[in-house]
Image 1 (tube, rainbow, N blue to C red):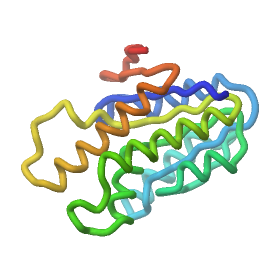
Image 2 (image 1 turned 45 degrees about the horizontal axis):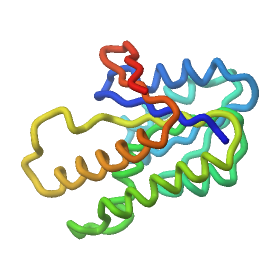
Image 3 (image 1 turned 135 degrees about the vertical axis):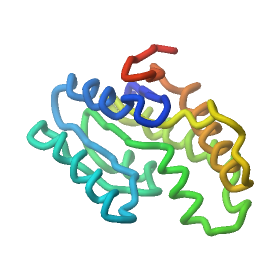
Image 4 (image 1 turned 90 degrees about the vertical axis):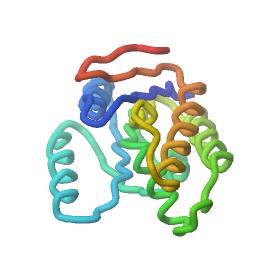
Length: 177
């Protein structure tokens, strides 16, 4: 059974850097699962920089926008870093269509529990990165509120099943669990 670690926090709080440092402590093959879609030149540059940060350190990268359960079920690697669940939720909403109610909290909870189930069948460690999107004001539009709610459901479900939860603030880790 893999140890499951959830790292959460605000945008630019140091989540990815901390997750990568934590992962580097592990010996053996490391798998980076990137959920970020390539949407423009600026995003391509971010992806390039992230790959460059991992270069020569034993990382293998898999880009997958929606089927995290499948990737975790079939790909090897003693240490797996999934960055990030927030984009995963975005991608699920996008790929399920543009209707306002295209995907609900029950489905997100089910998919997140499936991630935990697949992790239980692995060895090593799986680190998930996510954003804490519920600390700000209530979004003004329905789609943004739905997104916030889905990310919140995913984060709560994963945190409940994780072995360790870390909240990042200004680059500093605060262990919650």
